[in-house]
Figure 1 (spheres, protein in one colour):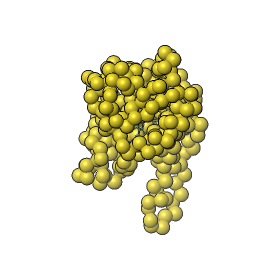
Figure 2 (spheres, helix red, strand yellow):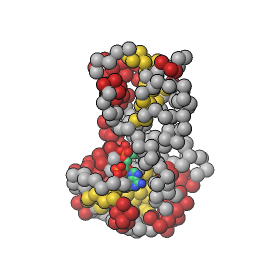
Figure 3 (cartoon, rainbow, N blue to C red):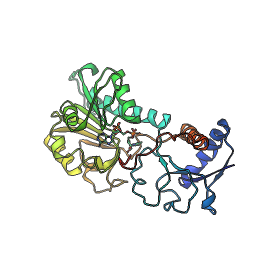
Figure 4 (cartoon, rainbow, N blue to C red):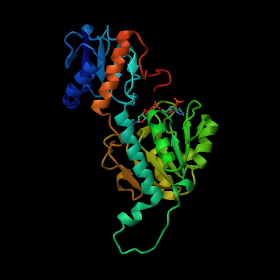
Length: 310
Ligand SMILES: NC(=O)c1ccc[n+]([C@@H]2O[C@H](COP(=O)([O-])OP(=O)(O)OC[C@H]3O[C@@H](n4cnc5c(N)ncnc54)[C@H](OP(=O)(O)O)[C@@H]3O)[C@@H](O)[C@H]2O)c1
């Protein structure tokens, strides 16, 4: 019998209490699923999420892995008590949701939809948007989410450039990497999508210098993490017209404080960290597969690289 502790928080429990046992059964895994940890030494795996019920992982001396339900692990990688292997979530449902959010907001700006939707006065001034084939979109981060979004945009004919830490190949996407690659990716970013993880290396990656590389009137979408952007530099770039509009889903402080200038800025759209969400049904299949691997002595999927921080 395998003992699994669900330490991902009470609100998530009802959905996972149904989805996890079904996924374990589909893999033929005999699992006892717990919500508390009276005997932490008996726990084989933790299904975890930040702000869940466990902060100190040291009592889980026999745990074979901590399986995170979130894609982002910035709140966990620095936890000195978490010495067990740590996996992050790559989930088909999470990916699908992110593709939809990114595609929708890219199309909003590409087509200039605000002109027709939010402007209430009679308006008969035909403004024809360019075709997607003439619009350059840059996606910073070509991981599970960035690559899926880049490919979806390429399928709509956008001219997509992607940027990652290490060289990559993504069909239909011009792939760049490294510091020179960043500059080349930004100078052509008429629409820029941030899907990088939060690490020391990505802190304020979009700052006064890098924002200045982008074409005048560019659009910025940040569904990645708030600290990727220097807020003051972005506000200055919005005020100068360098950036025409920023659609932001994630922030340095969440919920975004009521007095933050982003709320009132006419060229900022705030969405409350809803770009995408791990979906219990598909995520449970990933958790079950990783437990099957752990039990079979096979390598875990989506293991976090502690040195890289993601
Ligand atoms: N807003 C939301 O609702 C929401 C939901 C889920 C996730 N997220 C965010 O989305 C992020 C991305 O998720 P994912 O699953 O796509 O992550 P991932 O698979 O780990 O991909 C991360 C990508 O970023 C690149 N990268 C990392 N550090 C870099 C650096 N210093 N310079 C250049 N590129 C770098 C990686 O390069 P390599 O390919 O070379 O490794 C990789 O392509 C998560 O970390 C999370 O913060 C947001």
